[in-house]
Length: 347
Image (cartoon, rainbow, N blue to C red; front, side, top):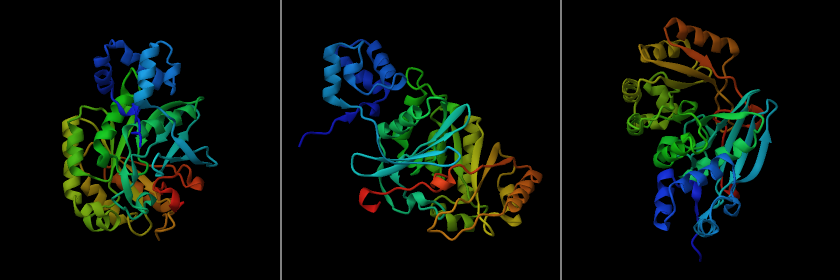
């Protein structure tokens, strides 16, 4: 059987340089290829007209550059679009494009499935199979950019299927490609990494010198509730996680966003607000309050609007800055916590 070609978008700028150097190609060829791939959106090497014929043939012989295959597409009434991509091995991941009048945000998957099985999120229900490659991560963003020509794709959030920091190397490589001014040139401060709280990787990220936004899924105001909702808390308990976040803030001088799900009679109570206020006292942070989005496998309920406002008001009086996330794409199952992973035979 012939060996499958490697996706050229798996290569960083430095790796592409290392490939071209033995061929005697000048450095500017790397810039030209990046320009074709990431600015002009060209996926056919034969159309890269300022490259020599010999180089185009060599690239086509060694690499592939195909668009991800869309198996399903759903558009919510608010314009939020969800894409189900079919990967080369029949894995399926979902990506969400969230438009506003003047810009667009893409919510990107980093794994086929999720190991961490948070008890309010659909992404881990079918289990975990593998990490996505750098090319598969970047490919989602390039596809989403093509779908929003009238709005600039200005923001990327790694909050789709999978735990981004569990696919650390491919995630960081993809971010550096996306941030590169010779490529998509998306500002690091417009890129958000969301994590369920992998403490060693948070510490590692602090040393990367990347000005990305870090969002930590807290979702519980004490160890008992967080362990009930997030099994990862048994390995990295809440006090250890919060200390890692305090260290991250000190090392990077950057604010951390805490994601906090509001579940009726569980996380959205006066006691929970008091505990959360005590937990985050003195931190340079904000809390993103997320009303629970229904997942049929779980019995949770969404609090009323009044309960949500009372919870937020309590946090404000305790000195914690918070915002309430406006749900987008619920009717297309594209809202936070509703993205899924499945193989072809499970659809």
